[in-house]
Image 1 (cartoon, rainbow, N blue to C red):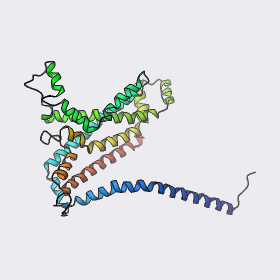
Image 2: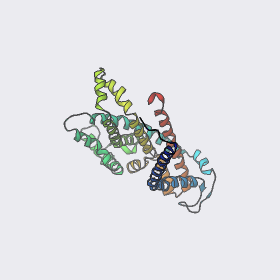
Image 3: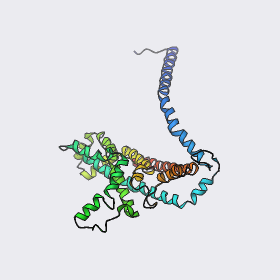
Image 4: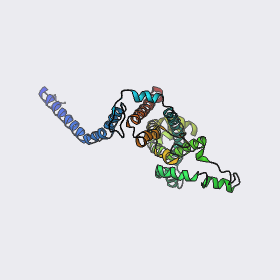
Length: 312
């Protein structure tokens, strides 16, 4: 028969268990303290500084400013150049993220298949991401240069264009915008493929065997088995790619620098112009606050969408 513990023994065991839990909790907080301090220094403090500067005006490079209230936000509402950059950023984010998610997922599904030389295919998929973004952009800028670019040379060689009438790829707002979309999708689909491939590796093979036994086709398995099990991975990847696309700077700066005119200028470039070129910390910080709010809005929408009962 099991022995019945007396109340004092139960109280002592509970006290020991409570002390152990408290000790583990203290150890956890001790180990997390450096990380929390780093987050405060690198995240919270810059965000609060940006918020404070958004209510300042005058001065240069943050020196000699004075309180302006909501003047910068009122100015923002009348700034046509800001709204053009805002529109470009939103379209850029939507188009490139959709393209990256579709192409990256397709590449991950291909790389996850078993075939000879699979490691070569995986290495090739990751190649665009291995090249620094600015380097990628400079290479593409040379390739699509209207005077001596590789693309015009090839088109001229096959007789599609003449040397006297080259295509000014980066001089046309429509063509330059299209090339930025293609470059962004080509560059980042590798990261999406890597993350999705990691998610695919966690799906047990027994799940696919059960699907084959039930007579499901490859298309049905993809939509009813693979993608639902990949939903957490896809959600995290979608959020990361959206944040990066809204805050894009080096890809566009090194490729077109907002040209022709301001046709390819996004919010990141516009913030740079206001702060680094004009020294207007107040107005640049105001634009940065708007960008932060838009980014948080996208994240909230994604989180709510992926937390719906039918999508779990």
